[in-house]
Length: 273
Image 1 (cartoon, rainbow, N blue to C red):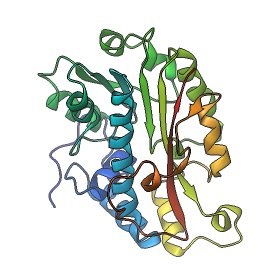
Image 2: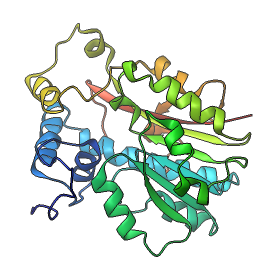
Image 3: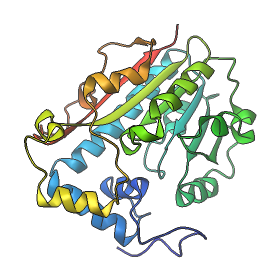
């Protein structure tokens, strides 16, 4: 695999970024050697990692279709990652042609690539935004041009919160988004869940797991329990079947992942009264 061209100014191609690692796991080409190394280490630590990534992507598509079928016509995907097949705007606009979508990411590669791909789109854009600074996203002119926060919106936080440590107050950031959402809005969350034994430390990390942690330079967040992950929904009403493994959330067809004794990915959707 060749490098995806010269990195944009300010991009450190020597450090792996979650969006580009995810791109590699999904079979994409917009990644660098450091990202591929991190992905291969993650596959050694958790052989099901690629299948988990695929199921997480399928969950995202089902959740978007659910929200569109429920009448949502505005979508904000935070930590969107690099474009792949059946992106949020494609799924949403296929379900409802007038849907408007804003992608937000703090990776310059993601933003630049997304803007280039969506240059001709009037209902979709990409903005530079960081979940840890919610007001910058909510007040961004690019978002305000497409999204009316006085109307119901779907906010998507898919496979991003487990990269944010508690010290950065992800709970406060998500609460700010919940507060800004109009009644009838939906919050979509997926989050890695480490097995209880590994989370408690009763089973030590494998050598690959330790190497992976070092490679990411401490950028991964803490191992949260399912109960802790559920608190990101606040007092929103969960949509059946609630917070569960992503492949069990309103599945279509058979899952491609087998159970891992190290980690899983859980997801859910909840509605604001």
